[in-house]
Image (cartoon, rainbow, N blue to C red; front, side):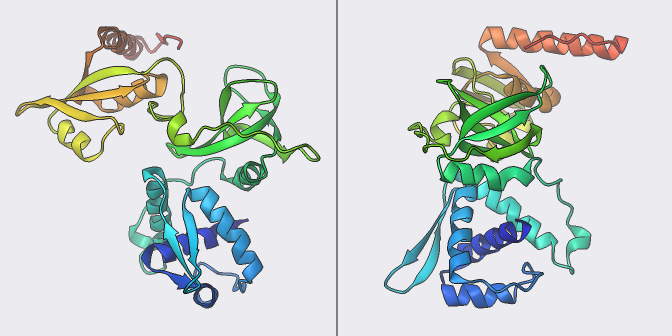
Length: 299
């Protein structure tokens, strides 16, 4: 499986630079440092690995029938981010630069990606055990709809057996994962990850989206201009000391975590209830710092 993902990474990197024929791909893969086992690539294996690369990175690898050359059709900005991260990972494997590139740890849960992707491709149901922080380990049967990489963790959003709503599972908490054999293909819901997570900050899909205005003080306002918090972000007011940014999203637990990540360089202007909620969180944090005891609120 590691060999397969190395090839997927290598292939997408190559096709991001130029179109290639199958013969060129086979020849250059055989000589690639990523192919540390020196395994030749057959046409059949290429077809299978190509499908995995498309599914994993949300890209299309098309073949121009007139030239028999393959080209990369990039997906959304999430796929671009993953590709960028994977390119850095590939660079770090080169002996001559590994001493001055330091990477974050690999995403948790990567070991079962292959099984989840295969189930999605076959519209098959998965069975697995899930360990939650809030309840005993339980067994589930669910049809995976899409994967998301967020904050160095893989998540799968799935439709559980007998349920008409979607649930998101963290892959590293899933064990004993297997496809349910000899079952009819499941009916896929007509929803894409872009649609499902459009008004979410991260992977929590709860509550209703609303207009939020944040005030970012210098220099954090410049940082947010370069690295927006959400695709809906836009500047609505500014002066020499701060910028007000408007966002439209669900004010979920992970969004509040993000607000705290910006320390004292960010404040909620509206809605009033969210500003008051953040003030309450900050007061509780101050009490915990003073006493060394928990003053947490449940969400």
